[in-house]
Length: 184
Image 1 (cartoon, helix red, strand yellow):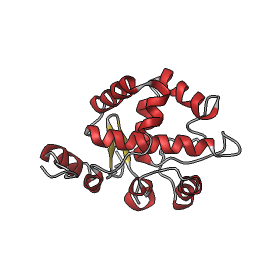
Image 2 (cartoon, helix red, strand yellow; image 1 turned 90 degrees about the horizontal axis):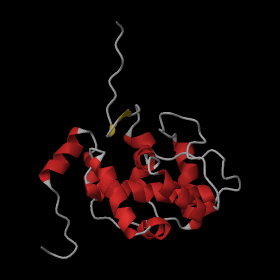
Image 3 (cartoon, helix red, strand yellow; image 1 turned 135 degrees about the horizontal axis):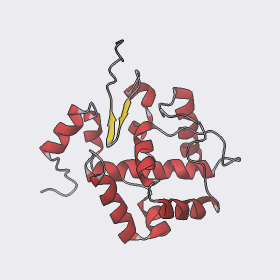
């Protein structure tokens, strides 16, 4: 195998394509920016355990869970750059999936908040249950990333393009296609 070559398992690419998320395949092997932050907050061994647990709890391959968690960490850092830490700020739906899995690991969640802000950070100040941000809402978050040099993966922050008709959350992931509810 050539150095830098990314090998994709057919079963994981088929699964992502079946879920309407085949475009994520191009992100396998991209640089992760914030793994060191998580390791600093709760150690490498616990980081690996959390990623393994999140992978087992979802329909996503490990590399994608790590990527989604990385952009969740970018979002958490962006929140600390706000003058008011409780100010509304939107997270994109795929990193939000990682956030909700991570929130079940409350001791590590608190450790990360304390490391970043010295206090707990409200994770859902927008008060939405379907975190599909508009261009303007997502652009506010992306603007903070850019202003403060916070690494992120742009493709994950395009809900308004990737999911123009919304997305359905399922217990172990998301699907890009929402079927309209039928009348009885």
